[in-house]
Length: 214
Image (tube, rainbow, N blue to C red):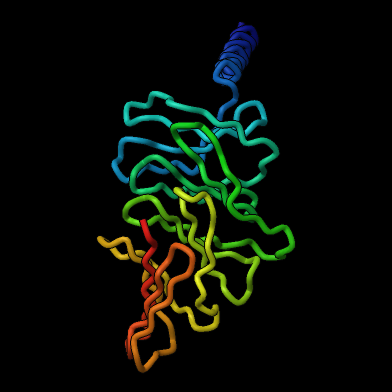
């Protein structure tokens, strides 16, 4: 009688286990990672793996999925960075590629990639306060690593500040200006316009102000 009871318990446990496995299969074997909320806290971006395929999923604060974007052949997806207007975001793939994602169009644009670097790349993407410019670091130009991408013009611009003098790069909290701290100073203020960017070197301050034209 005892042996029969043990067998019945084992059968029940196995049935429960298979029910759990089947429930996971019904949900598409989905696993989530890198959950990141937008500035307004109204949208959430996360990478979801379903049946060995990777998706970028955008959902609202109530959990309703707004869009799903298939990212084929991706092995490592990370570093989601939202624009301040909640309309765009960037993410990295395999530590070698920087992508721009348009929420409204459900489209992804490759901004930068480098397969020759032996070390993982740190793009350090940062969005301007108005959400129209994205600054990042490029490994394709060793002398001028800082770049700015314009959503309006759909192109990137080099920021002509040498890598060996850059200490820190950050957008101004309120103004649409990129401030670069350097380890060198100039004796007089200098201004230079490059494409759609005005760069100002502040005297004795070791600061470069980069102002993109709207």
